[in-house]
Image (cartoon, rainbow, N blue to C red; front, top):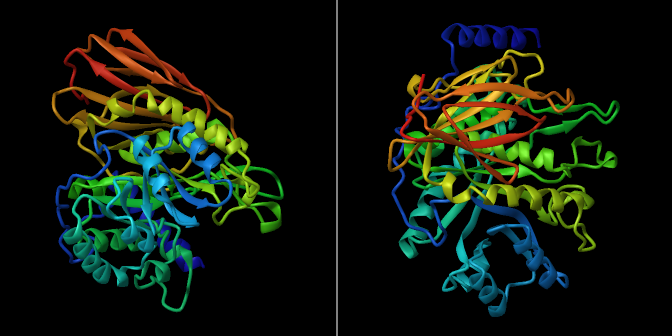
Amino acid sequence: MFVKKLLAFFMALCLAVSGGAASVIGSTDGQPIQATERTYRYDQDKLQLGVYCFQKDEHYHTLRQWFKDAGLNFAVCLMGQQLTDDDFTWLEDNGLGVFAPRSEYYRAIHRDAIWGIDFRDEPSSAAFPELAEGVKELYAEDENRFPLINLYPMYASSEQLGEEPLFPGNDSKIDGLNADSSKYRQHVNNYISTIDSNIISVDVYPLNIDIATGRLTTYEYWLRNLDILAEACRATGRDLWVITQAAGNSKEEDGGKRHCDTAEDQRWQDYVSLAFGAKAIVYGCYYHGWWDQSSHMIDNAGHRTLTYYAVKKVNKELSVFADEYGRYENHGAVLFNGSNPNAAGAKLPLVKIDKQYQPNVLTAAPVLCGCFTEKEGDGSAYVFANMYEPQTGKEAKFTATFPGAESLTLYRMGEVTEIKGDTLRLTLENREGVFVTVNGGAGPIC
């Protein structure tokens, strides 16, 4: 244990000296594949909102209406009874879609509501070559639907990732969490060097609770996990999809992952994901899944829970700028004051991004800033999130200046505010995030 800690210390020291995290690119001998550009059956130029785990049973007709009412666009991991022609017609009439299991996919592939196939969850690196062949076959059958592969998060062990452990004989998660994240970077680089897919999907569940004390904690590598995947997306022309925590464990299950039944918890996860350029947020879980059944958006009796209403509220806020957000491309994220002991998810530094994209921010608080530029045009946009630990309850005050801007558009909790001039002064509530566009010709600044 001492050797592991000593190694981690020196790795972290090297990162501190270099001023940034090691890149995922070049972590293996494989050459990253530039993803083939394809057109799918959903709008790829806007933020999409989905759910993981949707079981069809006697409650289905109510559940599908609540699904729509919650502002959701698609579902992954269908279970239970097969969807009928009427079900597919209803989805299509409402512009909604599903990523179906293999049997359902081939049975109903002619339906527009089939956006793709729920292809594989959390494969090891050893499975990538076979998956690559399967992906090619699926695209040969229909280029307009894609196979969704969901990767492990960074807290997986080397054995789960399919990488050689740092310490042979030890099935220890420290192998995935070593100070330069090398095993996880290798895993991701192996993926983008083997599989030609437009999406990198991951499930990261960052919100924890100490059952004995009730203390709220956050996964300390949360930001770095998203950072690694976002960098891989930027380098290979892929979109980042994030499955967030919309459920939790019960005390009887020894707890650990807390129930995320407040808008604050849902909002925080969403805006942190957006800061790294996420093009889809997928809530896990809707109805049935692997968590305490009472913590899902819909409980096992078919009733809406507090989690449902929290997701619905935040989705309504996100939908206000879902189209606008899609006009921009992400260049990475910067964490200001990440060394603050109360900064959530800041165990490892983030990869350095070009100074031209970074904003001029003054703050004493830990504030995450995602940096964007227009895909067509010279405008810029930013996502800001308060990164104080929830346990502290602290607000985050900051000032950001955008020289040359005539005005700013602030999207905050569903409200849109036009701010004249080039300066944004905000105090973010604990776990709050905002989206900001810069108007009037001001480009990225340093």
